[in-house]
Image 1 (cartoon, helix red, strand yellow):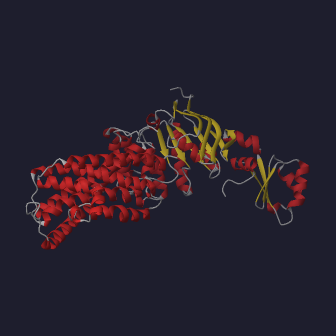
Image 2: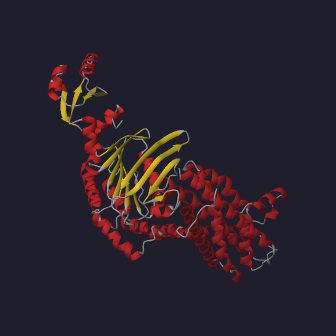
Image 3: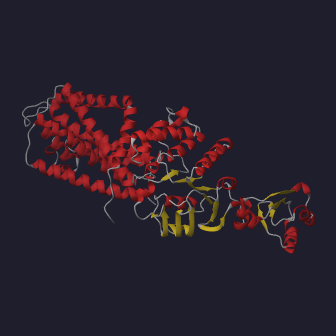
Length: 258
Length: 307
């Protein structure tokens, strides 16, 4: 089997999704700001009442939580886009079928979809960052690097979701994905608490879920405290992203080109 | 390009899905500028053939050239010269009528200025100018089909592939689509269409192949096929209970070609009124009418087209 043939035409699919987003932006934009506002204020202020953090230079729980929520929501944005969004376009609207009748091939379509998912992750990261600032979370200047990282994480989480979508027999199958993959990543990826608080075995397992390196990186960039371990986190994310991206292309071709 | 050179050429074309043989070793060639029809009942292999021509379904065997290029080679170059009207509507419901055309033009890398011109032209041609801003959801089925055709024209294709272009349309919408397809062909565009409506094939197609269970069982100009297989007229007899055995024997003696579908007996090869008289069937239960392509299909397969 040859490596999937992706071309610059995947940008055409990205443009299609952007155009749809722009014509629906009023409906899309509000949840972007409201949901992180609810989470950050409820958990950050509410739960933060009980929590004192010594290790991170005495910052508040909200300071700890905000970068974690940014990483987590890059996952949610990309995942919703590449599960329900992509499935609806593929099966119900037959949009993929319409596009692959043109010089755009199926690998371009899937790549465009994942790039768009990553774009949404980036937009989400920005929205949460702004909400965080409004609530008094001031990041280090290094936090600007969160932007390209959010895009990369979007590619990783979008590709994982896309692989599942390529195998999903029906739209209700996504319940499994959210329960068995997304929820554990959300709660055991170090978003809400440091992994070392977990029992040893669980902590070791949790360090391998792809959310953990994402949270490590965003948190380090937010606090401006870089350390060599982050290189491994980055390589781990790149490896997962590339693996699942390739698998999703192969699997989608298998599903759709018969 | 030579007008008479083939724009699509298939040799020993085969399509298999697992154990199921959908297209069984067929040959055909379509000339530039002609309307070529694939006729057959549902499941005969028409859509599989069109999908292979559209480069979205790999061949299981044989050879297929489109515009002189093999579909196993540079697929993007082939798809750039095709327009595809699918059987199931797949307009982009997240976009308006106008956006559907403009976004589709972008998939072909059409420069924006050119796309604007072509989108206007296509809408005007398909009589949808006043629907520009409409969302897809409010269009009637006939308008959706016309928009699908307009969309397929956005890259000024040399070949337009239409998979059952009028299935499900009311007669008025169907005639409008036919008229537009006629216009297209007279402008030199090749049309490849699949249909199970014999009337449609007769009206539109220069040449047809009749496909049955993956094989081509007849080919030619619609008029020639009718003359060759079914003759000028068909005698249709509505049989009463118990009448069949007696008639069957008489028909055999007369050596007349016949097909039985349900309670109707079709008799071919002329003979008309006189034949009815000799068979002793009441005139009220007999119809003498001109033969059509449908009769050719009946005669060749022993069954009706639409189940």
